[in-house]
Image (cartoon, rainbow, N blue to C red; front, top):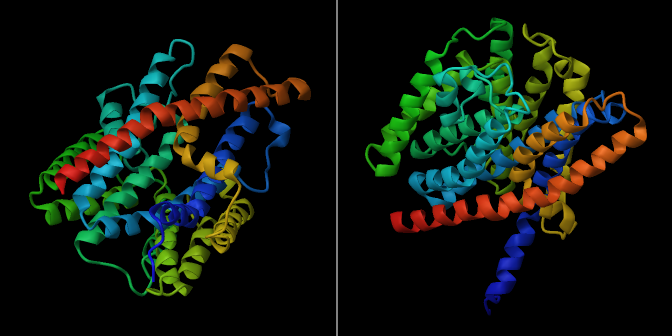
Length: 391
């Protein structure tokens, strides 16, 4: 047998992953659509589901599907962390700086602490997990991405591969229990931001220096789990999010013949049902009919895209997936600036609202491409160079 040319092999690998990029692109568009319709085109905003949460759940399923596989593929938790830091932080820090620079015209959210604890919380990305608010409302999701990374890295160094696919059940049960147990997180206060920063910095320093890697990774994972269940803004919701991510992991293992699928269904049912009895579930998009339909649609979208894996998908959608992180973080500052300049649009004529929507998209797409080209890609290249030196 003759090996395929490198270019053909590369294209085959790209096609194999196109469905994940398409999901990222769809998720980013859903979040943009949620904020755009909320502030500019309210008559287009769906109320049977929450469009933003739908997009976020799709994102989390993709992360859960790919992150543990990435860890195992690299086989080195230090390489994994270098890749994650240089993948996420350059654009994240730039978005924070941009938001603060715009603060004379667009006020920073009132929920953001006006002391050093806000700096500590932003430094770790564990914003929601320590009960703090981000300078951009969208940054709350990064808290749970980081929690998942810490948990996945801890499980990796412990050699836990979950051949039975039961991992999603544990946070799903935790969501059901914490939803019944308390209406507010048991732990709160600025001290959480400082303590988590100290543990985060010390733990990652040990991991990257190659000293006590196993112990440091486990300590970071234990901290992440404790923050998730005892201090996150809504503990049952945080646990449900992590259950969704581990569902993505279990699906990936099942696809490779390394696990079972039924625990994913049980976990999904628990996640969908928890708002029925949760003590803190008063906001509209976790009312059972809305929340359940949102969860079902996110799961169906992931399943449909997975069924199409290996096929060519629309280049526009996969292209949006490539710049989805930029779309996610750039759209809100742009929208806030336009709303400050144009004024209240929710009661403007429909034609004006649609015009603003078209303007937002016309500006957002090139801005996202630029931030991806000049912030994300250089950071990723630097991370790969450092990882090669480490090896």
